Length: 516
Image 1: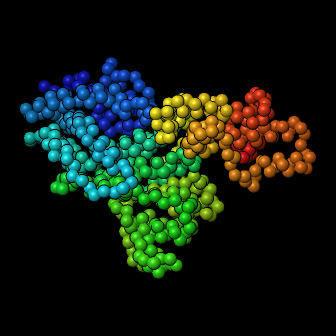
Image 2 (image 1 turned 45 degrees about the vertical axis):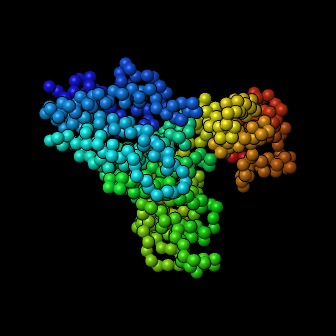
Image 3 (image 1 turned 180 degrees about the vertical axis):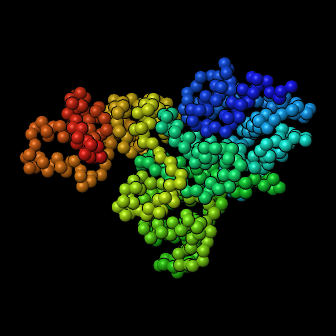
């Protein structure tokens, strides 16, 4: 008798592929549909955090309920000596791994939430480990059967804990229902587990800390949230004897904003220093590279601002994983992971000689690009209300729904749907608070540059070289570039929206008006 019937095999095969799929890619939905057949519930292909939406969707719960009886029946057959080839045994193994993950999902979630804060605490005993170990032995340590992956209970337990933490930090903090936001969440998941989770579970979990992650994107798009999601989702070994994880990840994320500090302070914070190394160094100090544990992460924000001399020292860290405190010659080991972020165009910085090419190629082994708010809303404008509601929940509590409706109405009336949101999520936060306090929001123009079209317009007006029509066209274009939408520009100019649109000078926008 075959180990699986034809329908059971189809279900088990789809579930096996689903168990190792990226949960934030649309492929997951296809596999759920394949596994459940007519029982599949149609759902949004973008799995995102909605204010009033439960985390687990109906299809996930249906799959979990189907797995256990099939795993129990198949185990019984194997224990009775049923024939099974390696492919059958691998399907059985994947069924059992899926079953165990969802059986301990709530426990893993509670533990993940406990360490999501910033304060480190000593690792605690995991109360449910013994029960997990017994369940593992029941399903995956069969008498006289060697399963293909030869899993160890403590390693599988550590992988489950990592998966749960990764999902928590990605799903809860990287918001947005648009496809660009979904692609960002999927990219962060790959940064943690790679595209091949089987290979990761076999060997790569030991080496991902050696690979530097570079996060790029406009200001205000959540680069630090991305870095924190990756850093707080590191693999942490589990010790079955002490029944504890080797590290508590709370407090193991070390952020350093390079744009806010002088080169001397950056060196001290990053590398540490010896007493007397410079004026004010009154005692020995360990830097972030030294105190960071093996499962920890050092995050260098605004890496494009890094002084050239420190770039050389950082390159050595990435090449040899060693460094020296300022004022010392003793080599010390960096054991953690390094993540860097910037909103600068690093290839342009390299061409100008301000950023080292060899350092860039050490940083970009793993690259994540954060989308702008404008990109997200261009794909799914309906997502704006959900983002506003998340912001409103922090400030207005039970009044959040009413405030969100008020802010959304104000934006549509005064800024319009095509507003550019130059400051991205950070600007949206200020807009919500301005409307909440003053029922008004005035976008701030960006800093002028040497090519600033406003300066050119003022010079041409002074010189008297423009016709009235040219002056109107250029002024309308500059006001549109500042406010980011036809509605807001029309409101400022006291003109009809269609009139403003007809006056926009496209060439001026391409030449720099959009940045004014």
